[in-house]
Structure formats: C-alpha cells, structure tokens
Length: 211
Image (cartoon, rainbow, N blue to C red; front, side):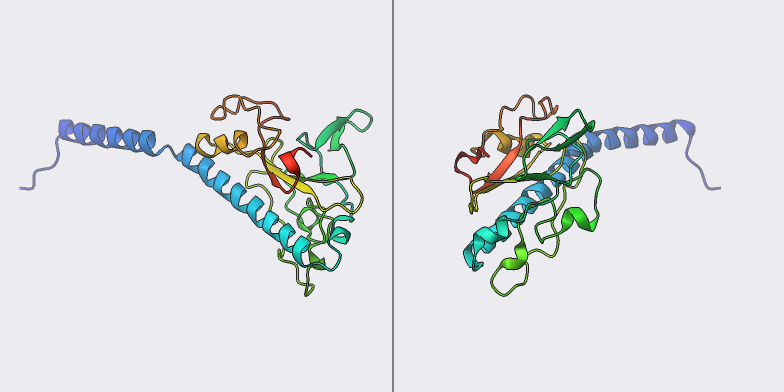
C-alpha cells in the first residue's frame, strides 16, 4: 500500500516553501529591481537624445536653425521647466524655450522629432536629412513625478540646451546629485523625499547645466 504524506509533513514542507519565498523576496526585492531597470532606461533614453542633438549640431548646415523651432509645450505638469498658471488652472512651460513630456501621453505629438515634440530640435536638419531618432523616447513611468523635459538657451541662434529626467532608485538616484547640474538638492532618494524642483538628472551642453 502506498503511503501518503502526513499532515505534519505537509505543514513542514509548506513552512519551508514559505520561508524560501520570503527569503527570495527580501534578497531580490522585485520593486527595487524594477526601479533600477526604469532608471537604466531613463539614462539610456537621455543619452540617446543627447547624442542625436550632438549629431545635429555637428552635421547640420545651419545648426542654429534646428533649434529655432519653438515646440508647442506638451505639458500639464510641474517640473524643472514648468510652472502652474492660475488663469488656466494647469501647468505649462514657463518660457517659450522649455518643453516637457505630457504625463501618460504616448501619442505621436509628444514623440515627434521635427521640433514639435517634447524636444524642441528639428532632427531632420542633419546632413543627409535622415533624423537620427525615429521618435522621441518618453519616461517609462511618465507621470507627474517622472517625465522628461528639455530647455534651450534663449540667446539668439544658440545651440545650448539641457534635458532632464528624475531617477527613483537608490543605486542610480545618486547620479542626480553628481551630474554637475543645479537641480541636485537631493533629500532621501530612496524614499523620494524631494521637491518637484529639486533632484533631477541633468545632461546637455549648457555650462553648469543651469538653464
């Protein structure tokens, strides 16, 4: 006769499995891994945009012309280059040289590379006429706290710019205070204890990243 498991044996096995499962969750911390993964994408996205802008500056017949396109602000949020407008009860870019990705908007409008997307640069003006980016990236979370933003210099014919993103993991979040920019007054990165105007990862060719 085949002998089955006793109740005590089953309870022991279930207990062991529960301990193993708890240990795996504590050691691997899926939430932390996802945060780091999103931050890795953010760093990659901004690097790709920076490289594309650099290509425009290096190869366009008239680089400044690519920066003259004033993008219609795709904004409804607060961020480093956005502010609240009481008259319209919404957030908007506070200058004609700043734009932000609209939270939750994954449409062609915010991704356009002709200067009307969230980056006000016409990438089609590179040598050869083929844009180095088929579409602009958007933040993997893309909400009121995590989004991409861009600002160019208001000086005539300037090709000076800055692009920003907010990082969320403790591992990558330290970069926000070490990027040389002026929006790095970080509180507790892991707990995201910060204000909307502080703690942004900034890259670009603006001296001091202070646009």
